[in-house]
Length: 269
Image: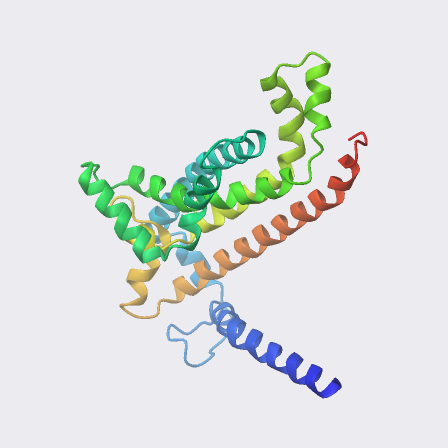
């Protein structure tokens, strides 16, 4: 058993090394003075400085941040509202609706991108920021809905009933009682939606125009021409932002898990 356990640990370590070694190399060479990432010539921050003077990268970064922010707002609204409706009410076809909602999470992105492109062509909607946002909301809001649904599964129904008994309207009870309870899940889902929107390539490739070109598309186009050290630098910034978002999400999930038991079994929140 000990030998099998050590073998399993070694295998896990090799898999993790295989996954993260390229990322580590990218981060290290973002500080390399050489233009070609073949030989280490010395430490420099030049490539990080050049990122902010590169008009194309800066413009695409602004596009990505704007699209991700708008996508997050709509995803949170749709995901939170949808999760509450699915939790609060029962009606025919509920399981079918849930399946359709979560379908964009499992459908290959190529199929999703092509399908959305065909839809926009059929309805004669010109490709641009609007089509990119619609596309991103399509595959982002199910993640918010899933996070909020998981939080609602542990909610004590007495919370809403107590608010209604004290004279609150259904809207006030939802706004003053339910939303604060769901806030850890909402924030976690929002961070997930923002991250997914920010780094999407495939769906955006089919639904964006030249003016709405996002940073991942800009980087994808430049990599095909050759390795640019500036891309290493901005990729490192992305990695740092992603790690921060993941840690924040985990913290919020942990906070939600720690606070949930206090509202179970009819206890006061």
